[in-house]
Image (cartoon, rainbow, N blue to C red; front, side, top):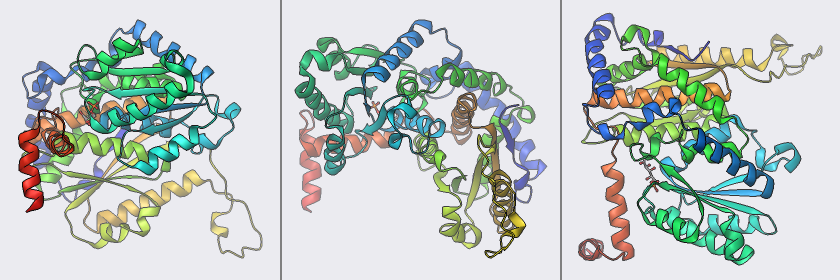
Length: 449
Ligand code: PA5
């Protein structure tokens, strides 16, 4: 049994008339997405990634991952946005909470750290400090090859690797994931002879988790990438059904669209598993970058319960009524901690004697869900049976497809990101990149006032 979507906690907010009204719009979005007649139609390659015959690429990924695992204490992954969050989400969700603190034997592979996603000198310096005396491999990921943060990190870490191993030694430890033909990084990989992986032209950053962008670091982390792709492939079939009543993915897209139309401007992705923290970051990027344009879009935020029930939980229950929650749950954990029995009942918890944490969590989820719904916050629920590689793949495909359909329902191109490009231009200009002289003068004049 696969992923389940439940929108029954929206019935005080949406009625049958709403669903009847949105059904033909969803069908239209489905047709435009599948026939390639919607905006951004040249960026739909992600739709078929899980079922493409990519045997030799998968073999190359697995061999590289095996080599990294057997020769490295640490893998440093350089990338930002879509070139970072998917892999980090998978590694956290499918790995051990404290993986980098485990002994190498227990972990079975290298520690994995990410860099190139901030402009913090301290972060870079402390990571370099951590690498002292360790054997390191590097995977730099950038589709454009031109994004400043990862490009800077690559220069710093490549330099470090060359000083440690010499240029020949560093060459055998550097892996480049970038555009097939174009860009600085592709040219650099060719000139230096680094092993490289290609990101397909028709797959944008935030939809690239099933390419080597996600698959190589995930495989180094020890997860089964075939299982991930198999879950995604089954999701592809299940979420391809055009009819709204039969398609949970389209129901999610439609529900959030209808709620948005009713003034719900913020979506809070809620989870009860700390391991979902970076999945939520990946989800935030997916929806914010895909939908937030031309003055439109739901603002995606994430909350981690129970922690956030004791902070923003107050606002959710009782604050401004312009939001809805999407609760992400796992039916059964791989371990279920049982509450021990204490005959003295000094802590007053006897009513929980012998209960498992899974059951307790289920009651907390229900309690918060009903309280928030009563407080005027519609709740959607996405549930996977277990947190496995297979269901991770299914979940990613579910949200990617829902995001594309949502974007079309909203009337935007879900595959571009003009807003992100605007900040990049300003940054290049202010840092003095050749070709940006006019913009630099304009911006500096504004800064000086
Ligand atoms: O989804 C996107 O396209 C972006 O978030 C990119 O992934 C991000 O800006 C990084 O770009 P690049 O891979 O070109 O360095």
